[in-house]
Length: 108
Image (cartoon, rainbow, N blue to C red; front, side):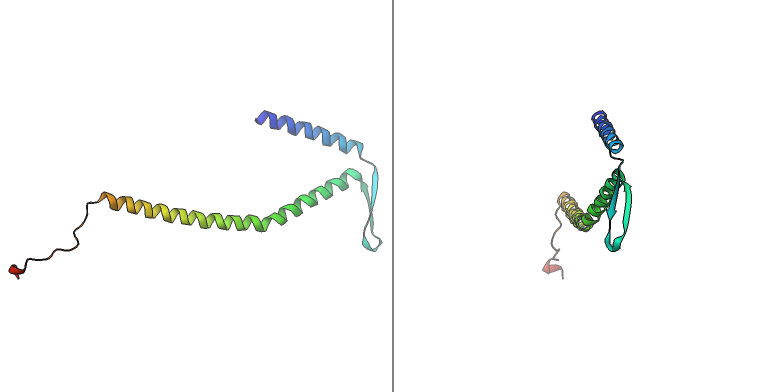
């Protein structure tokens, strides 16, 4: 499986490398207030890809933290149930204790 993953990664790298070699023409981006920037097309595509990946991770962060809090809460609940179960098993192994010992009335 590891070999297949590496072969696929190598193929993708070669494809993206040749894509980058074929897209080196200059492209001008026009921003607000008349600001312009001229760069190779492949660099602009890479920059927007990285920006999209970063924004995707940032958008996913609150959900990730919520799931981690829920998982921690569930782990505590499972630990408490496991502890109660062990206490119950230990109590079942001990012989029953008498409720109370009442002295005979004629000895008093």
